[in-house]
Structure formats: structure tokens, C-alpha cells
Figure (cartoon, rainbow, N blue to C red):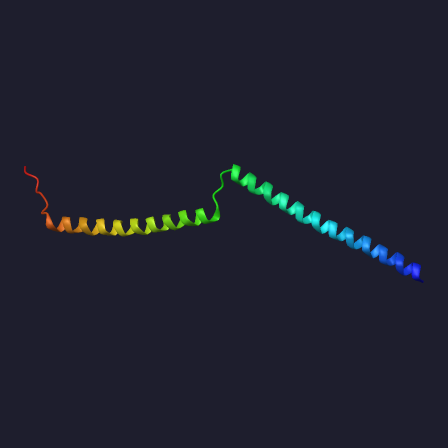
Length: 91
């Protein structure tokens, strides 16, 4: 009876060690894949998320300003059209 328990305890220890090793290998593999992907992305000169968001915000602001200026120019052109009399052609 004692020898059976001892064998089972030894098998449990071996299985536990194998699981621990596999978990460690999985973590190392994930770290290696992540490192390789980061290296690949940096070589491809891909924009980071925060950089992309900053440029996107700048573009939105520029578009808003452009729309305001277009309205202002249209208003000024309308004022100029009212202020200056139209020239009559001489025949």
C-alpha cells in the first residue's frame, strides 16, 4: 500500500513538473512571438496607435477650420458683391 502511494506521489510530482515546464515554455513562446512582431512592425514603419489618433485629431480640427473659413469667405464675397456696383458695358 505504501509503495502504491509513493509511486502515485512520484507520478503526480512528474506530471506537475511537466505542466510547469509547459506553462513556462508557453510564456517564453508568447514573449518571443510578441518580440518578433514588434520588430517586424517597427521595420515596416507602421504608425503607433497614439500617433495615429493625434494625426486624426489634427485632421479633424483642420477640416473644421476649413469649413469655417469657407463660410467666412462666402459671406465676404456676398458683402463685396453688394457693395460694388456692377459695371455696365458701353456700346
